[in-house]
Image (cartoon, rainbow, N blue to C red; front, top):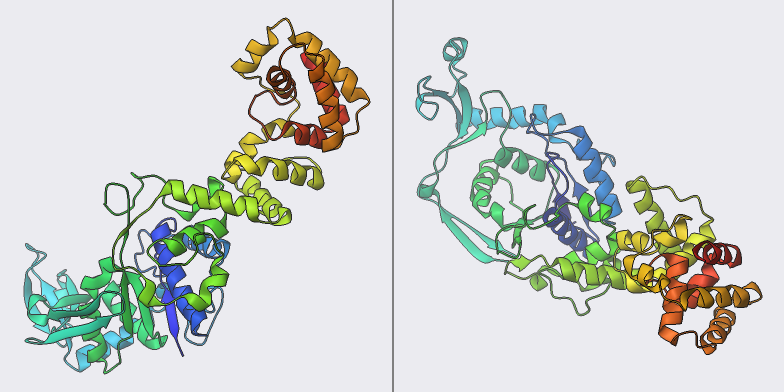
Length: 455
């Protein structure tokens, strides 16, 4: 059975590069009826925080990357936090020492890099005198380590370029290259998909697999996501975490859609990742680095916002409001009506809220352009006539259209000025959702009150 894993470290927010790696793992597991594992690699005791682990789990669920085994979904190969697996690591370190494939290394007090003593027995006399003691893996010499990368093709290393490497620190903490092998081996991971920055780790890990007489998984190293300056995507290019994109009002469907086309050949540009499972294959993953395009992500987000059913959009909007600690005490159906007429001209939930804010407040802030219109001699007659017509209008799009056409026919000014004056009086700005639709959604009471206030 195909078993893949995504193994983030809880030392910060979840990076979109990591999410794309998780997506490819998720795709492959679902495509092959396999198992997708979430493993928390928290051996960096000083930097790892439980709050980041909680955010990672929450963000994975928000992204729709449902996993089968993980810290909150126990399976038969747990535990799924490395910090809870120390006894397992010690057992396998002791096994390597017993088989003389690893040894204790004692370091000079003057030079932390200089090994002054090696032993297969714990050097208690040195330890008691305050010397630093680690465990090192003994690299086999004059060997070729080769593997067939599913993205990069055949990659080969000569073991002569590697020195013996530490697998357990002096404080007893196991090292990454060791823990990842033990975990993948015991969790029966069949495929490892990760960023290409891990290529240099792979030969060390293969040597460890061979030391345990275990079959290494298939590897696929995915090119990194870059910023516009062709360096790895980081905060200097803009927001990079899932939390950032959530707060900015991006939809999970859109973010995953964009990451799905970033470095992968897809037939369409707009899709739901659930619909692409059967089409996914690692052969379609590009071997070239890709640049993160914030404008394209925003375009994709806008397309999803405009095409999804209004109940789903409302649910996302409600979640975004909670994320930003914004409370709207309005009827659900009213909010849905506002969102439906406002989403045409915006691309994120944040923009949607800002664009539609006039519907959710009785204290309008009028823009400068509207102030200029208000100073015209024809302004007051236009608003007065609008009040008279809307007093008796039918509050449907057709009814409002008919009423405002009657106002325009009075020719106090041209039709554009007439409609802009009404628009500004009702919404405080001159760029709004459709005027007829806005009046219909606001309703008679609010519309007349606002017109009277401006007059």
